[in-house]
Length: 402
Image 1 (cartoon, helix red, strand yellow):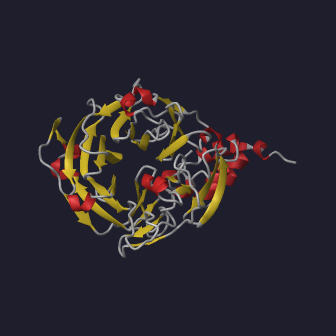
Image 2 (spheres, one colour; image 1 turned 60 degrees about the horizontal axis):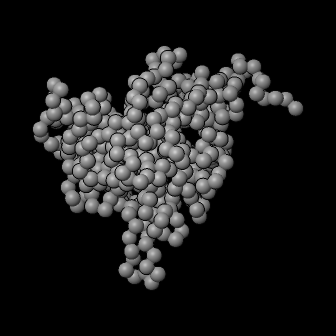
Image 3 (tube, helix red, strand yellow; image 1 turned 60 degrees about the vertical axis):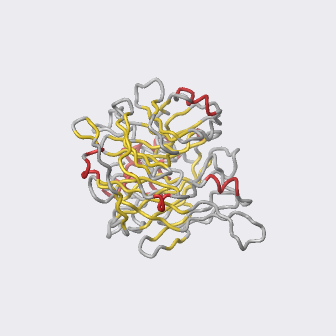
């Protein structure tokens, strides 16, 4: 029997050039090291579009907490599981996703970055116990980190032979959900002292860290200035009460979006069993014009004293949002289907990130997934989850990159 891993490299490159679906491209690169190298060599050229601008896949949650590292990938374009990839480095780890990279978390608080579709090594990060104030929370290392974001892909560089060292890793962690960050060369994590309420989401834009908390406060932080932070804007109480909040890039330059999601468990007064019910009912989107207060809220190295406005918008234009356990991302969608084929503009694609749903409902959490139409205010399902899904290894959006 022929050993397909021994095919000549030139032949593998020709095969890679003839693939027409991102899912096939990912499956091709996952075969072995030599096939992955051929895929990586064409990563800037797949259909003339960088991989990170292609349609995200859903990496389906582990079926149980003792899985062996097998992961299924569900395609929104094909509406089915299109690949099953063995990722042994995920075994016994919790993971969160950002920009196609995974933050792996071990039982002892050890953490690292891994590109699951690359043959490159893991990037070690400082242990959780180097986060200031870590011990006071009596942490469970597996669930200490709630959210993870990256300012850039560690593998990105102008020259492919170079390694990108100019990136920031951001975490929301602890039972009180504070903000921490790390840069290459740091021996420990840096903590952002400013915290009015528990943080809900974090992103990176134009050299600054932006985060939103559960009380609708948008905070901006300069990672190169000892984590100095201030409140940039505040959402009205009636919009954030009992909501999950997210922050993402807007269609307009110098603007960010704050998104509220109504998905907290509630009790149905008419139900006899008093079983809490949960499921996403509505999203609202607010836009914040950063140019109104200077880039990042800072002018000439000092903070502007004025607060910015959050204006509700009814349309995302030609963008689609992806949110949930993974980092919140905003994708440009083209009318000809070349950018993000299969994705609908002005829609929000979401996975289940309501931790209360995992423990407060008899059926377990993880199944509140769907697509929200901003124009009609309706939700449609896209994936029917099995009865039990792991909170340690949840379903997450992932944009493959080699």
